[in-house]
Image (spheres, one colour):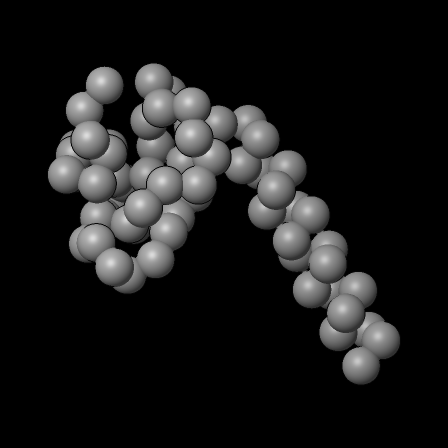
Length: 63
């Protein structure tokens, strides 16, 4: 497996990381030190995003 940080071919529109061979859900962004992104090829990513959005929505309702 290639280093996903240096593999520009795995990014769609230079933003969305999509690599079925990479088992990680959260991966470093293309430019080191700028944070992390999700591997949108993993089904668990979508569950995690939905859970995060629900959490933000619930917290916003209580504020």
